[in-house]
Figure 1 (cartoon, one colour):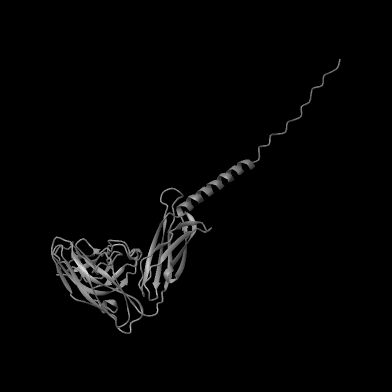
Figure 2: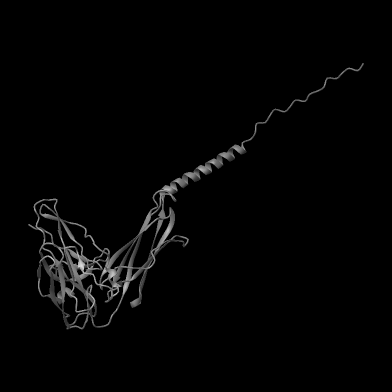
Length: 366
C-alpha cells in the first residue's frame, strides 16, 4: 500500500527538466528526502536567444514540450498575452524515450518559487489552484505511449474576468504512477515527473518591483595567515517580488575589509526568476577570509529592462582565536624578553673595598 506519499511540489529547470521526487517508505510512513535538481536554474531560460533550438523537458524516460507550430522555432515554454475573458487553445507533445510502454497522468497546476533557492515549482496534484492552474483545462488526464511514440495533450486556457493585471504562472505536468512498495522498509521509491511552464501576462498596468528585505553574513576566519584552513564566508539574502511582473535581476556582492579593501567580488550575474508575490532566500559562498578584520557585504540587485534596483548590506567580525592566542603568546614572550634584558642591564655592579694607602719606609741617611 502506498502510504503518506503525497507529492509536495515539482521543480523544473531553465530547460524544463524535472526534479525526481524520492520517497523512502519505512513501515507505513514516509521519510521525505531532499529534492535533487537535475539541471541549471530557471534564470538560464531568460537569456537563451529565441532563435536557438528549444530543448524539451527530458528525464531520460520521456520528454515534454510545447507542440511545435508549423515551421516556427520550437518553444521552451508557453507565453500568452491576454485580456480578461480571453481563451486560447494549445497542446504539449510528450515522447516516450524508453524501451517500455509509458503510462502518464496529466494535470495543470499553479506555479510558485521554492523559498530556498527560488526554484520554479508546481503545486502537487490535488491541491487547490487559484491562478493559471485553475485557468487551464487539459483535454486528457492520462496518456499511454508505446516505445518511441509521440502524443499530444491539448488544453484550453481561459483568463477569468476580474483577475489582476500582470504576470501569472503555472504549468502542465506529466507524472508517472506512484510506485508500489514491496514491503522492504529500506526501499527507495522514485516517482518521476516533467512539466511545461505556462506564463500568462494579463493586460493592464505593469508594476515591476523587487526588494532586498534582509542580508545576513556568516564569516569563518582563516586560522592562520597563509597556513592551513583559510576560512570563508556565506552571504544569505532575502528578495521579495512585490510587483506584478516576473523578474530576473542581476546581482553583485562585494566583500570589503575595515579599511575598504576588496576581499571578494562576485561580479554581475543573474539570479533565478522570481514570480510576482514570491519571497525567496538565496545564498552565495566565498572561500578565504582574513584572520582579523571587520568584513562588510554589499549587495546590489538590478534589472535594467524595468529599471528596478535594490540594495542591502551586512557586516561581521572575522576573528581567529587561534591566531589571537598565538599573537598574545608572542607579545607576552617579547615583553618578557625585553623586561629580562633590561633587568640584567640595570643591576648595580659590586663595589670593591677601597685600597689602603701604602707608605714607603723611610731610609735612614748616613
